[in-house]
Amino acid sequence: MTKVATHQEVHDDVEGMSQFTSIPRRIVAVWLPLLVFIFVLLFPFYWMAITAIKPNHQLTDYKDYSPFWVVGPTLEHIKYLFFQTTYPQWLWNTMLIAFSATALSLFSSVFAAYAIERIRFTGARFVGMAIFLAYLVPPSILFIPLAYIVFQLGIFDTRLALILTYPTFLIPFCTWLLMGYFRTIPFELEESALVDGASRWQILTKVVLPLAVPGLISAGTFAFTLSWNEFIYALTFISTPEMKTVPVGVLTELVRGDIYEWGALMAGALFGSLPVVILYSFFVDYYVSSMTGAVKE
Image 1 (cartoon, helix red, strand yellow):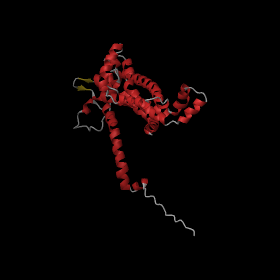
Image 2: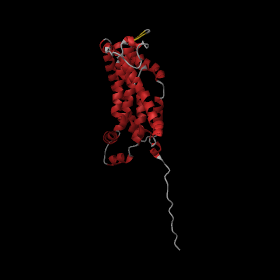
Image 3: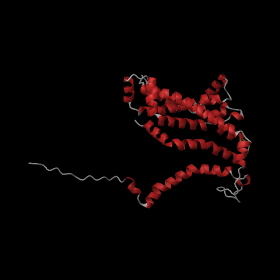
Image 4: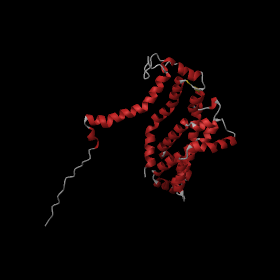
């Protein structure tokens, strides 16, 4: 006696994006949150841009002029910023310090992350956790002992003071990020290279690093952004106006007592944020992919 198998039809109740096919649902669930998100992100840049080109008499006269628009734009604030202040020098200082601190942090983080994740020594996991916990220490606490070290080394009021202190908060996070990315690279590749007679240095430079380029770009972008926007260390370790960075210089040199030069302030903030915006626009894909790899188990 043969049994006839009956196949029950399987229905997939998952709607996916089809639940947003109707126009009202799409507006409420997709377009409205997206517009709010875009407005929150872009409005500060719009406000900085219109304030930077507003004549002085329009900055506070809200009866005759709209605060959200400009009539008769002027470039006087931008000319003042670039030709009557040391803003170009601040930009150069910030660029040099950010690139140098980022390069130093990446160089150290690559070796630390590779040693913790790939060599598999005893206690590697605890070392990795301790490095990440070091990132959680607030800079407002660290700058006190670091100030003593900077004075003892004789590098106070120099760009070197910031280049050497910024890695104290850049290396821990970059190491943790690269650890997560190195973890996604198959161990079989290293084992095959070891069988072929490759050294650890050759494996790192010719096998691991080429595969970890997205992770390196992400860690570098993160380190560069933090270095560019850092304020506490730059305010503490630098006193000469010509040595200051953009975040500190704009605040301390363009605010004189109770006089705020709003046009120059907004122009300085706008031009100071553009390099970071441009950097993210070029490497956003690498940044997202590497962050995904960093949290992947």
